[in-house]
Length: 286
Ligand code: DO4
Ligand code: MG
Image 1 (tube, helix red, strand yellow):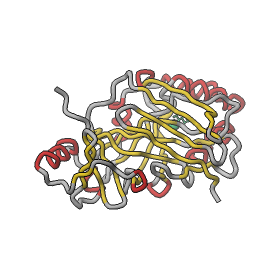
Image 2: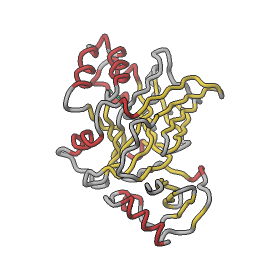
Image 3: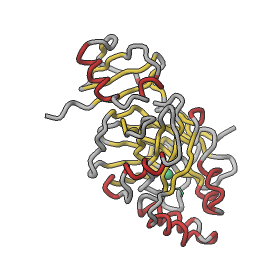
Image 4: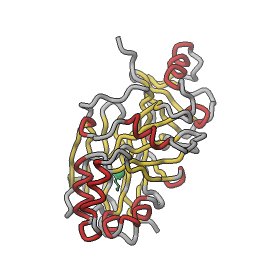
């Protein structure tokens, strides 16, 4: 019998562990101390078993949930799905993109880029932003790995890699500006604590609501990804150190049509079975 899955939430008062609908309060450890443990899953199971966690509740209040990050860097893999390769080749046609996106999709070395420091990250129900100087912005719904300092995948969460397609399409050297800005990254609502990857049949679903109606929806299964997670982690940790661990986005397989751009007030809903639904609202940076 597989053990029931464990979801870890960072909250205003510390952290909470959810298992089979019951919520156990954390016992005062700092978030960094907790999520740098290679044995995070067995540690949390033991806390529940031994009763060393705090009081038990039936429900977790959504309002107290914070992004599951403290001192970690956020990195991202790109062009790991055919749909992303296709969309980038199209958007960067006049900058020569037909060639370099195809090459990175097929190359042995993956595309890895720096995505965010913790202060650029928003949590569940927070406001992500579109750049003031962009006129073609999209969310990128992605499965995100939580990796310990030693390079072990200890959990999975949901991420939104907000992207300015007109800026990255104009010139690939503008990628950091298209990807890294205030409120360009969302993570949450929790970490599915498990060394075992979600099944390849697991769906990532994106829905964008505008004025209460659906403006776009799409889905992809994890099986459509070209790269395996261990290889992405191995490349990221080559000649790199992450003393507090890190988050790694695994790439998007859902790209809205070229006619679509986000607007202020849109609601972005990204769901991955077994983890939950990350909800964010779109704002403009001031
Ligand atoms: O190469 C540009 C970024 C690709 C990306 O973020 C993705 O495929 O998810
Ligand atoms: Mg991405």
